[in-house]
Image 1: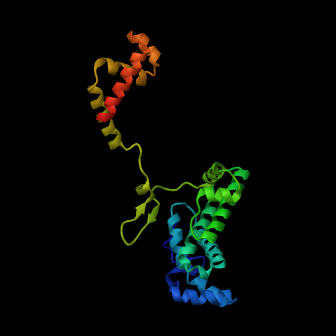
Image 2 (image 1 turned 90 degrees about the vertical axis):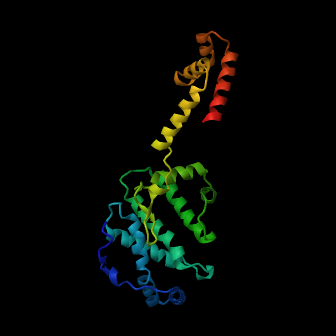
Length: 257
């Protein structure tokens, strides 16, 4: 997707106006009074916001014009539902609305097919989420969404996961006139090669401190998967002794690792 193109959907993005917060408040008062010209001016003054948001989706392979139109729908919905009395900046309220509209569009056009019943639950959950955001001016928890729908939390989680589109690890999630922070920067690698390597060294060092019988018991138990009774029969001691020696060996290893 080429978000650097000047003209999108017939709109010259290089000449988009920018409104101050005071100007937006004045226009919004007129909008609520039914002034359609003020509404059009308000929309034009916030198209840069839509443009900046669709750049977050520039690795989806979608056409920029399509995403811009969908983003504008989200912008209009935000205008229709925004309440000036909450003393919240319009952009703070509009951004999640626009992102939500784009994500719904991407889900609807996802090549991965999800059952109709599951999609219905997911869309109801998204509607409940929007309702709770409007009501409480904060992001609701999954438990709150499930309670709103009178559904088990697990069913809501499963439905939302089923329609969640995959994202690139190289998608930028924050950029403030410096180096971008990507999704991969926020994901912990539980199997980091360095970490696994260091743990392996620590385990080998701990094992080397055990006596031969303790090493044999741990090898039979955890590498060959034998029961304590089978180990006892193999090395000629009681199962109680195997249990005691195993616990002692593991205790020593925990201290060393």
